[in-house]
Structure formats: structure tokens, C-alpha cells
Length: 193
Image (cartoon, rainbow, N blue to C red):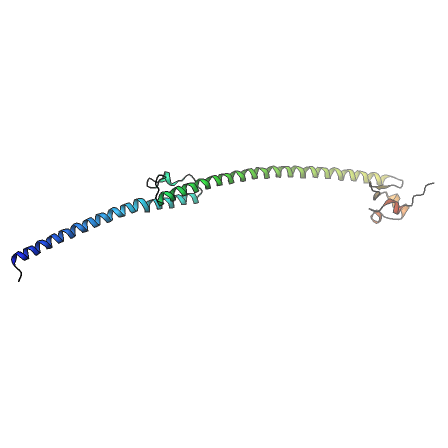
């Protein structure tokens, strides 16, 4: 059926086919290796470095940028990774500025609050001193009023009774608590002689 020449021809073709298939498989493996290498270098590693930079920023380390931490991600590239890298660096710079501004505002506000706190303490101390002085003056006035043997009534600028001596209480028949704050002219009938 088949001649020896035909069999040799078939075997030669089969060897050529196997050789070509082997070369094709080797080229395919080589091509896949190169493809994986470029995929790793230009996609996976830059994305990992972007992730690492994001982790630094999450820890408030704004010194990290994608253009300084990688050689495969650069500001010169116009592909998607390069665009993403530049956008990331821009965002990092804006965050750094915002955080710095916020920190300065917090420091300024803290200083303002400390100054206000000191001023408040000084004011409270002044008020406490004034209160003690007023209490001492009132005690002195009450002691003086109590020692007077004549009837005497003390009124404020509006004519309201503020204090009176014990002698006056006996003369009028009222206690200080009964007439304190009332108008002097409503209580005492003044007769001009």
C-alpha cells in the first residue's frame, strides 16, 4: 500500500512536525515568560509599591511618593499606572499640606486657649481678692453701725434700705429683714419741723 519512500516521507514530515511543535512550545514558553516578566514589572510591582505608599500615608508618613520609591512607576509614563502614580503623588502632597495646616491651626488654637486660661485664672484671682475686700469692708461697716448708739438707717442710691442699727430696729419696731430693700420713704414718715 504505502511505499518505503512514502513511509520515509511520512516519518520525515512527522519529525519536522514534532520539531516545529517543540520549537513552538519553547517559543510559547519564552513568550509567556517575557509576558509574565513585563506584567510583573510594569503592573504588579508598581501596584504593590502604590499599596505600600498608601500604607505609609495611612501612618501619616507623607514623605513617601511613588516616584521616589519605585523605578518602574514614574512621572514620565503616560500609561494608566503612570497617571495613577502622578495622581497619588499629587494627593499625597495635598494631604501633607492639609495635615501641616491643620497641625498649625491646632497649635495656634492651643496657644490661644492657654492664654485665655491664664487670663481667666487671673480674673478669678482678682475677683476673689475684690470679694475678700468687699467682705472686709462690709464687716467693718456692720461693726461700725452696731456700735453707734443713735438710730441710723443706711440706704442705697435709689433710697432702698440696706442696713440699720439695733437702736433703729428698737425705735421702729421692725427688724432689718422685714424692711431691707424697701424704699426708705415708704417706711419712715419724715416730718419737717
